[in-house]
Length: 222
Image (cartoon, rainbow, N blue to C red; front, side, top):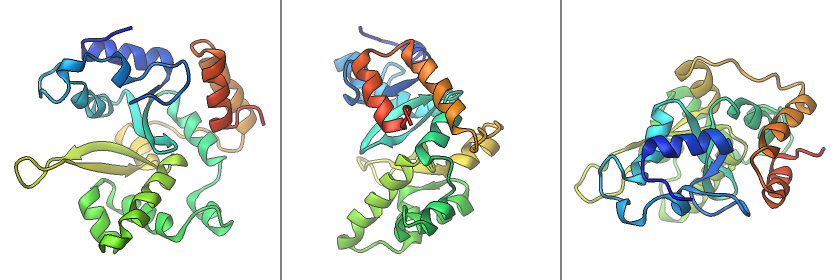
């Protein structure tokens, strides 16, 4: 399976619903696996590196580290359900009060929620985690928030100097869904029906090994 255009990539995300950026889910395709090797970082419309942000800007998928430390795309209509399953229907404050969220993650979430949309450079400054030895604390907190689907990546802020890496932009998932996209939230008090709905969608397109992985990550068999 190979794809050479953005439109083909979009169709794959629509088909598979959950589509990793790179190798992650057993027996499941990813963008790095299907995209042409010679088009990366060319800056052309065929550059898959640009597609990862374009598909979010086009409001077709959520993007973030929803499973561990690797990036994935989740088809936009399925994302509200996945978000509820990853958070187990609990708010940030509920998880923090229960000891399920770190202080750094809670503080960073509140900064993002208040800002609406903020790039990583300014977010790190606002968090106060600016010392070299605090970089891991900052990065762990961002992964923690994405694993619960509390935040999503919504773009890339270009570097202030030529040749520098772009800085990812973040929004809270609630802001992205309700304000940016204008969608309604999934009912967080009916996790059983959401599990059934997500499992029905994924089982149509996933192999047994892929489903086993997603069952575990999304707690579909509880």
